[in-house]
Image 1 (spheres, rainbow, N blue to C red):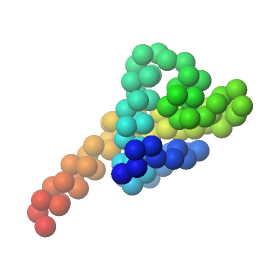
Image 2 (image 1 turned 90 degrees about the vertical axis):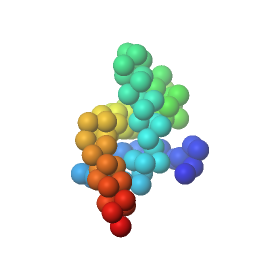
Image 3 (image 1 turned 180 degrees about the horizontal axis):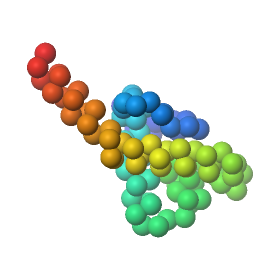
Length: 92
């Protein structure tokens, strides 16, 4: 797994976890932590996503919102897919 995976402009929207999600799990956790700390989205875009909101405001906002939404989905629903995958792998 790459230590600093490239951030896509849009996070996945698939109804199951994707390889992208697995590679960006740490990014998702950082986004959720930043939200819990009420961090300014511009700082989060710059620090976590590596996008300067002063230079690319639309891209920074879209990428931030997309990845935060996916992080929330993964926290609420994605873990179920991991559990299912783990049980299936254990039965094979």
